[in-house]
Image (cartoon, rainbow, N blue to C red; front, side, top):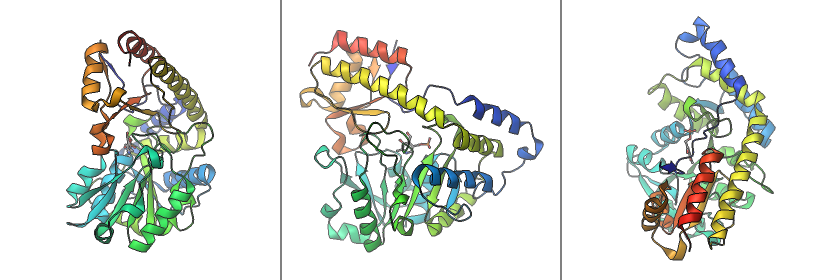
Length: 359
Ligand code: PLP
């Protein structure tokens, strides 16, 4: 009876209003044709995205030129690389980091360069430590705060520094922000685009997967710099033909009407975090949860190698967790727990931890 705490894929259903809207729109023959505004997404969806950004992050966007519908933020990560990176370019990525970026950089012929992120700097990269010859060759940077896998959030000061660094060195920023809504006490939901100058140098990706439990629907958005949006849109127009209109209509319902789902999920994740933290601390850890995401990034006991620890954990408890080293060399010495399983399964996993682990 294996329990997987490995992936960030909410098990709770999509809000009922969203499912209803999909059904209603799916019955309309006009939605059975190729999507409206194939390469950019329906204007009504882009308008809903602009309104959501204004409401949630005080960011003003022109839905005509500064917003693009995506088949999930992962697709945006890929098209960003194809649009921006030339063969031989260096692309900066945090390490540990979301594993999706590197393959897209490789597909574009680029060369990923790891920026270590460590607890002593709040899991933020030190931009001043990047060697000058690397900065010179770099054309893009991927970041993601609230961060998968560490759960760290960015500060406004760091974002300011990043924008300045990118402007000065002509580096395009892809801020991948699908966890923007998943932050806990004392943290503000933050968009990079709310900082002055961000739109000159950055696109931000976002997603309906996590806040609205819509991972399987494949819907998200890119917003920000109009030239970058246009370049991504050109790549998309030559690759896919956009999203099913009915899904975009359902996405509008999520963005406009389902705030309560986000609040509900946050209270569930808060409860689950507490359960894991109490369990770990009762076993001898001294662990503080991170401020964002539904992941817990936890040091292995006694400095054990990540893979050795997760293998031992699996052998003793039949609970699957990813080793930190799967997210990059600087993830060594950690493992990650995702809180997107049911309360019942998480409770069972924690019972097994209590019965089998003592550090
Ligand atoms: N970016 C990050 C950092 C993620 O953690 C994930 C999914 O876990 C994605 C992108 C993919 O999200 P989407 O479902 O919007 O494609």
